[in-house]
Amino acid sequence: MNQSLAVARMQLTNKWIYLWTPLIILVASTLISLAIFAMVPDDATTVISGSGQAVMWYFFALGIQAMTLLFPFSQAMSASRRSFYMGTVGLFAGVALVLAVVYWILGLIEQATDGWGMGGAIFAIPWIAEGAWYTQILFYFAVTILLFLAGFWSSTIYKRWRTVGLTAALVGVGAVLLGVIALITWQDAWPSVGAWIMELTPLSLAGWVLAAGALLALTSYATLRRAVP
Image 1 (tube, helix red, strand yellow):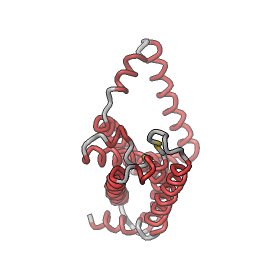
Image 2 (tube, rainbow, N blue to C red):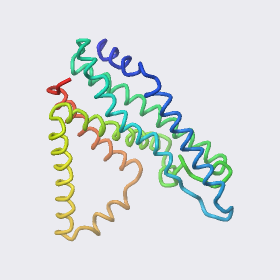
Image 3 (tube, helix red, strand yellow):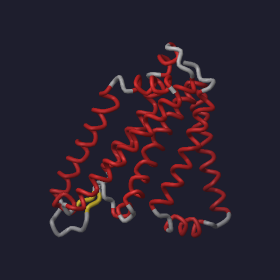
Image 4 (tube, one colour):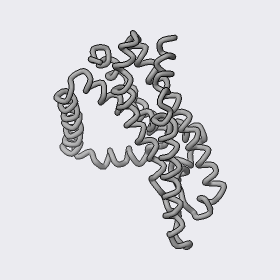
């Protein structure tokens, strides 16, 4: 546990990467969306902006950086691979939860001000904002941690098998997805798939996203055990 906490503190050494850059992205993307809302005619319906996802996607880059920048240093400091994994994933799970709460609070402000006074939606996306407060937080958390784990997973694959291994893994994932699409098409099951998608709620979708994140987390740990610093 002490080693895991030490790894978490090491990850936070560069506050620009893990604090100020996400804040700059959040503020800049929000201001850009507000500028766009100001140019939309007043009689338009609610304008939905996807810029709120910007910080979430940055977590994909953080997942890559967390592995590639600090893993060699942690091994030189005699931290075990398990401690590095627990400290890193635990830290960013906490950061993702904080970000999810921030998104929820900004969504409340957005709703209270009628879309920042311009009828816009950045954080209180209608489909998501219709759920309970805990559903919204869980949804934002699930998406953010999934993107982080996707970046972390790709880095562990690269550290273990380098470029050839990462390429092969990505091709394998693409082949599996193509196989699923082919199977659905062969079984003429697209109407059923479409109906299932339409019935998804933010809570159920968050559950599926967390399941995908758990799969990435398990495979990342298995790969990290033999990764080369």
